[in-house]
Length: 241
Length: 304
Image 1: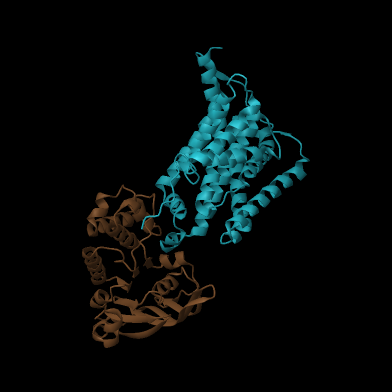
Image 2: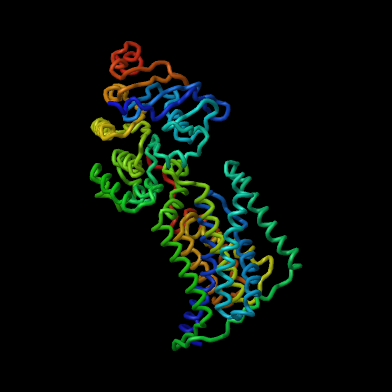
């Protein structure tokens, strides 16, 4: 695949923190266009913070973040989203009090063309028929799995070129975890580049092309997903047994 | 006058009063929604709105006359001007305080209130200023009920503004964004919404609505003065709490309820009109004790 050689996202020695607490201690990683890359690590290793620094929610204190070769290190979050880098945060963040449809409409906030919004909404409804059925209901009254679909559907309304997925399977029943991963795979195969943070390392490594392992704010290991899957230390630390 | 007659007349009076309360309460509740600030300067925005409306009217009255045409034009011009003033106040006074503790921004709002009041006090030497509007006295006789044209125009204008606001909030992307921001700012930023810009729009609309009320109140009651925003500010706060602070339909409902309550309350035998504030604030206290979330307010329940 020739597109795989192009870099869509690059982090170079990124440091970030909350107040005096350092959360990221010099992270460097690369995501190729069209790839699915996963970020593994224990709780508190800095996976969520890494995604937040990429999407602009957490300020970068050192190093550089580049998206499609443009430096986005100091750019406000809403501008980054406008460029097609869309972050689906941990916990889904469905907007309570707004209907499913309104949640989706807002996902396309930067899309000014109503025809394109309409087309994307149809695509999302095809992917998640349950959202169409419940489009007029309050988004926060959906089940956990449906809320995750809404969160992903809302991101797709944007027409993302890079999708950051943070723990999409968190709190879901095993069957829904598989379903969520199937959707991630489907999106990836349709051409969306994905950076996936996932607690279920076994599943993540099965889907992804490449993986990074985080440990207390820095990357301690990286490699092809197939290689990481059989790596002894990874198996012991994250895959159990 | 028969009892029914008095009832209908007070209904109209209550609607007029309630329209003013509702227009000011809307700004209170919208601003609380997006920045979680009880903007205690909001009543003074109403007052400044009245004065800007007066200034515009005194310029254009010789051309278009001091009737409703003049008042309408003054109102629209003042709404735009004071709308921008609201945005400037937000940028200068509140924006730097958004991440500070709640109490700091509340104190800032009180300071803004004092600045606005004292600026107008200095400029007007604390005198009542005749508005200079001449609305006439025509009315319609609906059998038992007299409704003046002025009252109809007032209530009609307020209703039109509120319907416009409701359409904006429910039908447009910016309106949806405004509601979304009151729920989850970070998620809004991830969706590409410029939160700062939406907050500015909210202050603009809130200030413009208060100005509409201020200009109309000046024209209807005849005069304005620097302290006229104090009481209505607190009443509007009461209305917002009755309806459920943060809820836009709640502010409209709360304003109308408060207006009707005051106009009917003063009809109870042995109770004069000087008691009307007692009614309002008794209701505020009752509401805070019995149903702090208000009539249409949602309780802050987190669902994972």
